[in-house]
Image 1 (cartoon, rainbow, N blue to C red):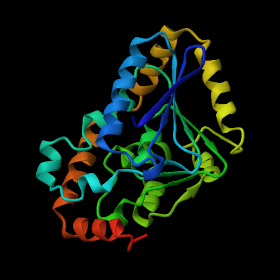
Image 2: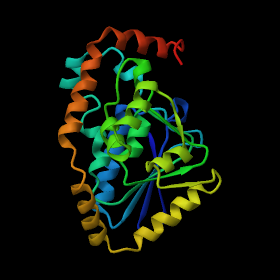
Image 3: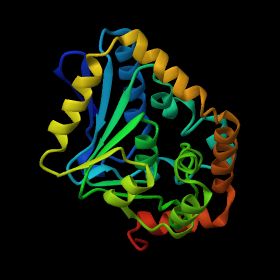
Image 4: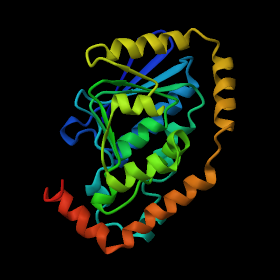
Length: 248
């Protein structure tokens, strides 16, 4: 089991990523479990879904060991990091990412799929993909650009530099920054407040918000470019170096 599921308050479902030995790296098994749980959530009476990671890592991103030997063709044909991985972005009810520690690469992208991000003041957000031979492939470049524009997005992706929780808040990526100790309580307070609203109205409101930011073409283009990096020599050399702990 890669997830821990709790119901800490009425109409609130809380999912904890649970691969601490891998810094909550996103693997196929984890994403399959998450997709199933989102299906269950949507069919339930619950109104709000919270996604959390561990105290030090929300998620370190894609599990590179799973995809290191892939090619662009095999990634594309097998839908590796395909539609299943973006299930959270299509959830029909409100979602909150509660971020403690590092949200890197695919972990950052997972948080961006949620409607809101609450972060502890010690969290960091980063796109390190170029240093390991690829590019963001779960909608990161598209969703971040929608929030902060292409210049900040370019800076983050091209440089691989992390930003702090406060900087993410200032840019409009994070909706609230709280202390590390109060993150869970603050997240639950917000989730519970939202859960008191009419569920049909919440769903209508979410549909209206999403309709203003339709990005299907851009997401498909990003995915195809992501797949294409697996035919580049840099993908193998840089990813192998990272996996061998030579590249940090």
